Amino acid sequence: MKKKNLPLVWVLGTGGTISSWGSPRLTFFEYGVAGQKLDVHQNLARIPEVNEFARVKAEHVWMTGSGGLGPTRWLELSKKINGLFEKDPDISGIVVTHGTSSMEETAYWLNLTVKSEKPVVVTGTMRPPSAMGTDSDNNLLGSIILAGSKEAHGMGVTVMLNDEINAAREVTKQNSYRIQTFGTRELGFLGYLDSDLKPMFYREPIRKHTHQTEFDISALQDLPKVYIVYAYEGADDLVVKALIEAKAPGIVIAGMGAGGAGGQIQQEALIEASKQGTIVVSSTRAGSGRVIRTSRHREAGWVAADNLSPHKARILLQLGLTKTHDPEELQRMFDTY
Image (cartoon, rainbow, N blue to C red; front, side, top):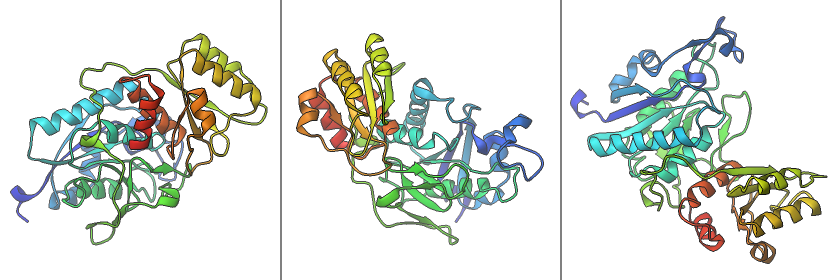
C-alpha cells in the first residue's frame, strides 16, 4: 500500500508504565525509582515497522501514572479527541497510551463521551520498555493497526493488549503483574490481532456507546462527586454518615453478592442517604454478574448498576448526574449504557 493511502492514526500519550524506563533489564516493578521517562515519540521510535501500516501523528499530553488523571483530565482528553476528529476528517482512528491500573476506567469514560464512530483504542504495557520481555512495542503496534482498520469502526472504544481486543465497557484488569491481565470475564473479548496483523472480530458491543450516547461534555469543567462505599462483614455507618454530612451527590455501594449492604447498620445509613438526596447505586464486589433492581431498591430510591463494576458505575453516575437526579431516569441510563 502506498504511503498516501495508509490510514492516518493519532497517538496520544498520557504516561504510565509504557512511558517508564528502569535499569537493569530485570527491573519489572521498581522502574519508577529511576525516574526516567519516555514520551510517546520515543515509544514510536522503537517500532519503525509501524510506518508500513499507518501514517502516524503523535502528541504527548501528560506524563502521569494511573491515579493521576481523574475527572478534570478525563474531560480534557475527551475534548481533545473530539476536537481532533472534528478538525481532520482524514483521521482513521486514535490510540491513547495509558497506565494499566486505571485503564479500564478511562476507556469506559471515553466510550461514553467520544462523539465519533471511528476507532479509539486504549493501550499500555505491563512491563516497561526497558524490561526483558516487554509487551510495550507489540501492544502499541497492534493498537495503531487496530485504530487504522475498517473492522474497528462502530465498535466503540476498545482496549488492546496481549493481541486481544476488549470492549471498554466490560474489560477488567484481572492480575497485578501478568501481561495477560486484561480480559472480559464470562462475556469474552471481541477478537484477536494475531501474527498476521489483521484485526479479527467475533462479537460486537450491544450497549450504546460513543456517538450514540446522550452525554455532551463540551461545556463541562468538572463532574459531580461520587464515592464508592465497600460492603463487608461488620461494616458500620461511619463512612456513609460522613458522606451524608458532606452532601455527597452520589454513592456507589460495592455490595455483597447481588448488591447487598454489609449488614443492617450500613443498610440503614444508605437508606438515610437516599432520603437526604444522595443518589445510591447498588453494584457488586463479586467481579462479575448483574445487580437487579428489586422492590427494595425501588422503595429506597436506589439504582441498580446491572453488570457494571463499582468503579465503572461511578463513572456513569457522574455523567448521569450532570443531566438528572431522578432515580428512574438514572436507572434508564444504567439499562442503556
